[in-house]
Amino acid sequence: MLKHAMAILFGVVAVVFTASTVMAAQTLETKAPHALLIDEKTGTVLFSKNPDALIPPASLAKLMTMEVVFNALSKGELSLDRTFPVSEYAWRTGGAPSGTSTMFAKINSAPRVEDLIQGVIVQSANDGCIILAEGMAGSEARFAERMNARARELGLQKSIFVNSTGLPAPGQKVSIAELVTLARHIHRTYPQFYKYYAQESFTWNNITQRNRNPLLRLDIGADGLGTGYTEESGYALIGSAERNGRRLFVGLSGLASDKERAEEARKLIEWGMNDFEDVLLFPDNDLVGEADVYGGEQSAVKLRTGDAVELLLPAKDRPPLKARIIYNGPLKAPVEAGSRVGTLQISMGDALIQERPVFAAQTVPAGGIGKQAFDAALELSTGWIRKYR
Image 1 (tube, one colour):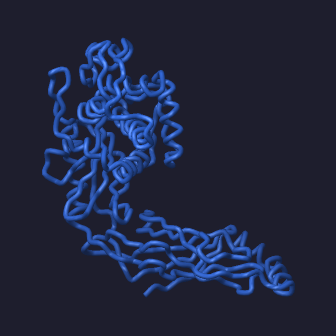
Image 2: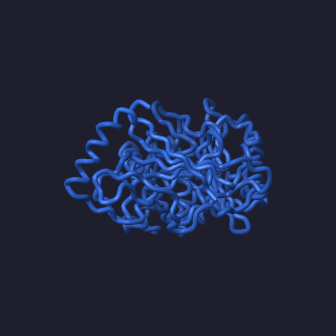
Image 3: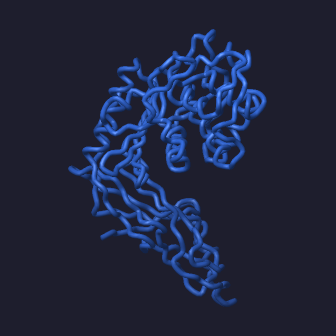
């Protein structure tokens, strides 16, 4: 049973709930300066530590490179059997002479797109990235423009990509939060290509290299996605694991070694798998509150969820959950049934763990002249209070 109270702040109305469902405080610790753990099914943030800080991406930039490639494949703009030439620039910058992670593509050879994808994902091949970038866009700089445009389309507002590899470059920055968002998108949108992230090894030019993702060998259900390292930001990882129907996405950066990176990622995943349970907070289209209406036949409209709101909550020792509905109010009539009018925010203490849209559960037609005049007078008498209270 939910009890609610109304709070009006600066023209934004917040209906605040105190739920009988309870949730444990974030008690787990990690050595990572930046970390995020999210449940895929419910979208619940299980662990969060400075995930929005901007950091150099290192090889995690390759997630964006692959998204652009997968998107082109899905649209038929590219095929797995298409070949691209290995330029001298790709060979020197990302190939054998570079001393960086490479698939050892020979200069002037022409690997297939599928081989390049496996080189990039399994071997973190910088030459593979540049070959794809030049083949698809003519130059790595133009491909980076495409990466940034696509990032904005996907809602990644802060990340900036300067090249396809993640090699150090001025202005190149990402956040763990946006990289986890990107990883979830790749998993959902491209299941036919996501399988490459779980590939144990890949052989090219008679050289076999194991997948650089250490989680794949820890028997925790991991099947993706990538690692990165820069001297400035330390060791980083974006990973995913699925076990017993539960899929988690983890991101972390700033660790001191590859061993520490693997240990911290494993600790977060095991905690998320073992210490939480699924809880249905609101079923499909459940009524969750109401919003004030200005100039309508009714003075309020009931609000409902869309899809069911589920959370992954600690199995033991849960303090209270808090939820609130935020909308710009009062709503101006007419209000159409099914129109989105606000956002349901669910928090644990000071941590926001889930956001969902809320919709008008009914239509509220505009009222007559007298009703609108009365509401206008009421607005004049209370608007100052709403603004400054």
